[in-house]
Length: 354
Image (cartoon, rainbow, N blue to C red; front, side, top):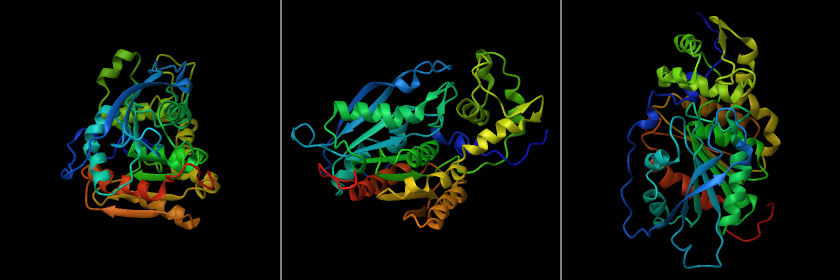
């Protein structure tokens, strides 16, 4: 079976390195004198996720990190950074990858201004929502941009304004940051995009595609390997089919032949295919940063995102650092992501342009 070179998402969206989400990441040294943050685990109801066909949880796990001064300074309000995890993991595993709360405490101890950090769980039946809008998975795009932000603003002392909200994410979360950022400039003021997947389409794994065509029941999902689950997640997010139980999705192949209608839908969801439609929105951001490891197979597409922003003269910072897809993610979070938001978010009650 030979497929066209349309699709990136079998490997690239599902992390560029097999099982990369499960490897150990390097922990930055603890910062002497760092003050502890307060950790709260809450459930946030996703109205946008109601009636999803996969049966994904509508009440989502969310981990909230409150800064050291939060309990004592009762009248103080804080900016919020929303940090999106990658494929194959949820919020709890994401805490292990970026080594929070230690890295949050370290960032504050090294001079970053105090802010609230929020880690939502967007894991689904096929291990990733793609932070997209689908009747099959639920509308995770709206869940992040609307339901989650509304909950955090209602339950914590936030600066409830666009320029005081930052959005960040790694891998699939980097795609989510790009996608949600493009569409919801009315909600967020700064973006930090880490090793994003799903930027542009590339060839699908033909062997995996053939295996997925054999799936007839949910019990069959147990035999699907990691490298093929990315295609299921992409299909659930970008080619949903409410009339096709039990998975309620259309695969990119049928009887070994490619389906141009499905491939076109997937291609249309590549971030670099979407971006030209949202240039006006992206111009509104105070700051945009992109980073990627020099040993990461997503390096080229990350560079294409940077080049596209440059083409439109949208200011952005792009850095290639020594590392793999995941090795430095905790260091980046402490020493780059949170300091970036410390510099670019608004820490005042009323910000012009919000």
